[in-house]
Image 1 (cartoon, protein in one colour):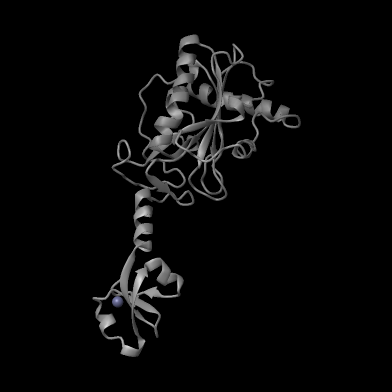
Image 2 (spheres, rainbow, N blue to C red):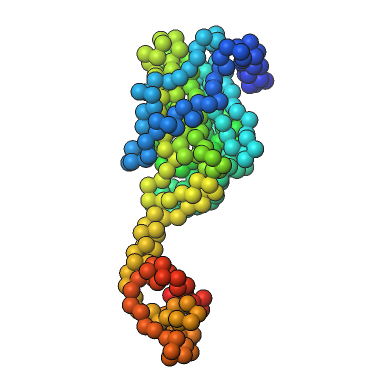
Length: 292
Ligand SMILES: [Zn+2]
């Protein structure tokens, strides 16, 4: 039964896709680019509407049965669009199993007190477990912040799940991760949904959820992260005036207490009060010993 559910629908989709190849594919691989152009930068709301909240599905090839498809990982190990026609028959009847063995692209272990549950990253299902019962499917898991998972995606996922559960109708549902350039962590996900039997009356949305975590700065190229306030503190330290001892011959600057500073010959020695940033701008570099 599992075989029929998992393998046959993709096969059918494949046949349909080949049939429709020259006219219109079932979903466009260019989809994320189309969305990207209209996405404003994150400004405090976990998600934003895309295309006036109208999903961009081609429903002409659908026959109203459930299916689920996932994109193969690309050369950098990144997920592509996950696309499903969600019906009650795809929904799981068992509790979710372990997914810790999957390491999505950009995965890094990071904990912060300002994050609910401490862990910055979740293995974030593109199509939520409650919709298609996919557990440790690497083509359906990305490195996503707790904030993306809970504040961004979950409310939309819940909307689809309760509609399907209550009506027995189907919802076309597509989640496309937005990877920019060669970055390993997605900037966000584009989520689209359309209830089929009632032409979108029950569920109809197109939104972009941001893969951000308030208070944390993420390097999307690698997945590395740090507290945003550390940036501010470092910047402040850089621009605050301190007194340094300069060696005008070597171009090094020292903390006044540094033994290296005491050894500087009088003709090369200069006391300077000002910011570290300005000194560096003047071509000085910090002493490796006292690390001023
Ligand atoms: Zn020094």
